[in-house]
Length: 104
Image (cartoon, rainbow, N blue to C red):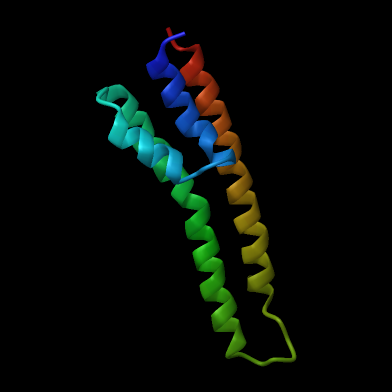
C-alpha cells in the first residue's frame, strides 16, 4: 500500500479521532501535492460540523431574547438539521477515505 494513499485516507478518517489536528500536521509534513489536495478537502469537510454548531449557538443566543415561555420551533429544527448535516459529513468522510484507499 502506498503511504501517500494511506495519509490521504487517514485525513478523511480523522473526522472520527482528530478532526483538525491530524490534517494540519499532515499538510505541513508532506511534500506531495496530491496528499495536500486531499488534506485541504478533508479539513474543509471537518469545518462544516463546526459551522453548523456555530450557527446553532447563534440561534440559541437569539432565542434567549425572545419570550422565555415559548421555545421557537426553528431552534429545534436547527438542532435536527445540524445533527443530520453532521452525520452526513461523517459518512461522506468515511466513504471518501475508503475511495482514496481503493484508487490505483
